[in-house]
Image 1: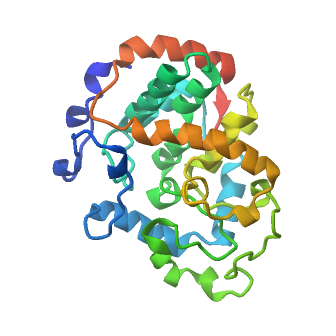
Image 2: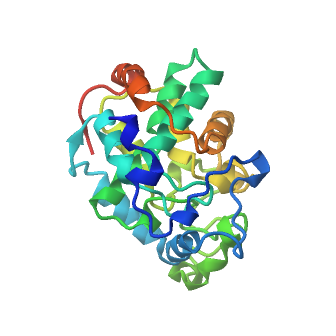
Image 3: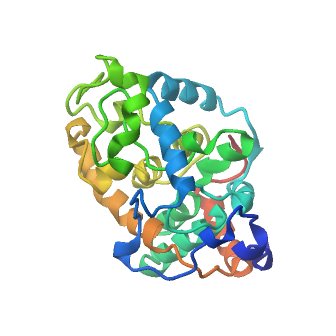
Length: 287
C-alpha cells in the first residue's frame, strides 16, 4: 500500500471536488448537520436511511450478513479495499476511509502508546464498510446508528425529521419509547439500524479475535451518537453498557477529532500495524 497514491486529490474520483474541505477544524466545528449548510450528499443518505431502516429490515440484513460467506481476507486486505471507499454522509471530510483508519489509529497511538488493543480498534473500526464494495447502498452501511423497534429520539441526526415516512412509526408495536424492548434490557438485546458497526462486530465474533470486550463495544457502538454523545437511550442500557460507555467515549474523540487534511505516511505505518493486527485478529477472516 503506497502513500503516494492515496492523496484524495488523485486517488479519489469525486463528483464535486469542492466538497473536499482541506481546512483544519476546531472541535466545535465537527459534526455540523445544519440542514441549510451540510452537503446535499449527506442529507440524501440520512433521508433514505431514516425512511427505510425498519425493525424487520435490520433483522433481515443481520441474518444475511452474519452468514460470513462473502469473502475470506485478512484485516489488512480489507483495509486495502477501503482505499477507494468514501463515506458519503460524513460532513467533516471527504477522503478514502483507509486514510481515516490510520489517522484514528495514530491519534490513539500518540496518547495511548501502551494500549495496543485500542490502536488496533482505531485502525479497524470502519472495516464493516466493505459491505459498500459488495453492493450495499451507503444508507445501510455508513452514518450514525440508532435502535430500531422503538420510537427515535430527537437527538438523531436532523432531529429525526426523516422518520415520518418510516412504516414502523405507524405501527403501535414499534412507535413507543420502549417499543419491543424492556427497560434496561441491555444493548446486546437491542436491534440497531443496520450498518458497518454491527457487521464488523459480527465478523470479529465469528472469527479468531483477541481484542478485549472494551474494543468490541467501541466497534459495535461507535456510530451510536444519540447514546454516547447525546445521552439518550439510557433506558435501554444495563450496568455493563454504562461501564463500557467510558471506553466508547474515549475512542470517539480519536474517531472524530483526528480527521484532518494530513495524509499519514502509510509506507511507514503498514509494517507496524500489520504486526499488531496479526497479534489481535490473526490470519484470514470470513466476511
